[in-house]
Each structure stands twice: as C-alpha cells, then as structure tokens.
Image 1 (cartoon, rainbow, N blue to C red):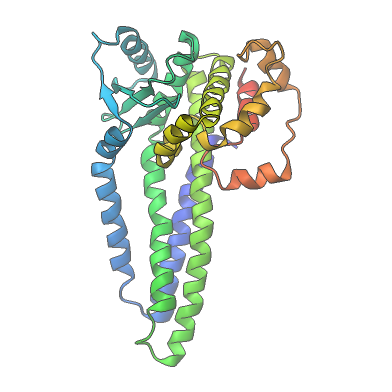
Image 2 (tube, rainbow, N blue to C red):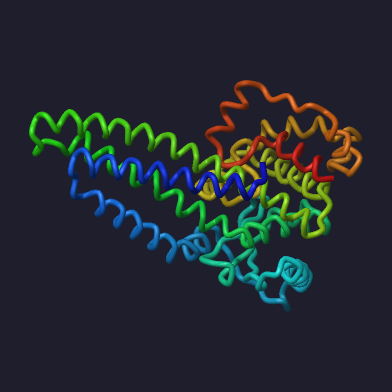
Length: 323
C-alpha cells in the first residue's frame, strides 16, 4: 500500500478510536469532564509545539551556521530544497559525537536541518546528500507535526482511563462498575494507540527514504549512509565515554535517521550485505538484495513493534526495491 495512504488511514483510525471512547463515556456515563481532558491535551500539544524547537536546539547542542561558515553544506541543502519545492531550512551543526542527522520545526517555513559533528567524519558527499534528502523529506511530508498530534491521543486515553477507574468514588454503585469497565477499555486502547503511534513513526522513515530517492539520490547511497551511521553508533557503544554520549541523546533517538539503541545488532546484520568488505553498500550489493527474501526472526518482529524505526534489514530491502 502507498506509504502516504497508510499514514492517512492511521490518522483516521487514531481519531476514530478517540471519538469512540469519548462518545462512549459521554453517552453511557454522562461524564462532563471529557471535554476538559481534550482541551488539556491540546494545550500540552500547543505548548510542546511552541517550545519544542528551542528544547531540541538546547539539548542537542545545536549551533546554527551561516553559508560563509559551511558553504558546501548550505549549497547542498539549498539545491535539494529547490528540487523539493521547499523554503531553505535553517542549517545547524549539533555538537554531539553520535553520528546522525535530524530535522525539526513548527512548519515547512520553520524547517531546520542539523547534522552532528560525529557524522561528518563518516560519510562521503553523495551519502551526505542522501541523508539531507531524507531529512528534507520529513519536512516536506509534515510528518513531524502529524506524529506530534497523534501522540496526544494516547495521552487523552490514559487520562480518561485513570479518571474512570480511580476517580469514580462519587458515582453511585451502578455507574461505578460501568465507569471502571470503560476505564479498562480506555487503558487497553491507550496501549494500542501507543503502538499505532510507533507504527506511524516507522512509516514516516520509509516515506522519507523514498523521498530522498525521489530527490535524485541513488538508493545505495542512503543504504551506505545507514550502514556507516549504524557502525558509528555501535562503535560508541563499545566504550564508556561513548555509552555516556549515547545516553545523553537517548530521549531524542526518534528524531534520528536510525535507532541508535539497536546499533550493535543492526551493524552485525548489515555487515553481511557488505560482500566486498569495503565499509559501504554499493549499487551492486544493494541490487543483489532485491531478489532475496529477507528473513526476520520472530523476536526481531516483536521488537520492531515497540520501536520508532523500521527493522534495518527490511528498510534496506525497501531501498533495494527502489533501485
């Protein structure tokens, strides 16, 4: 199914879940505080929307750079922005050792792209272009805003579950049992909706990969970049200082190109694709994966359900199908 269509279906499903719970509470219990939960959640979302970029800038130690300081990086981003039909985003260097890149902002006009200082030493120019194309695609698809909005729905369901299960002391005995039952349903849907938000996060990564290729970047360059970034994070996990660096940005891993927490495991998998041991995934190596069936273990399938990024082997396979 088209990735954009999947995201649209997910949005409709999430709001249908929310509507169903709110309607159930209002109809069967006559609860008058449901609206207040929604208003509170919207308020938190707006607050996050307003201060989020400043928090990311501070926590990720971003230094905004001018075209005079980083002429090649600015030129690369400007050229691809024009190709994508986007205003040129603000350009920054994140002063962290974890090799990666990320995009954020309140809107397309407020787009911001950052690369980490640790990434510059790993990627060549073509791989960097592919990564920039991926991040620009996040901005173009507005998926950062979509995920932020969807994340509010589990929050509302959680509050409703708490209120109905533990706040029903003032209700008469007959309604108290009904409240507890619907509260349990709200908690179940809270868990399910959290998994759906993670699913949406994985969709947006596939979609951004596809967007990078549509901007003219060969799929094997993005695959090679993912391989190198995974290697860089795995290498950091092998040292005490590196582990500390990774822990400091743990809360922001959903922003990154790959899940840094799974770097060790994913690097071992990707090494098998590097047939000539060059440290890259070239066009021929990616093409050879196109006809192969990707075998994912049951444990890896289960693990993927609880992650913000797709299984790396499946992701590289998807890039192979674009080549």
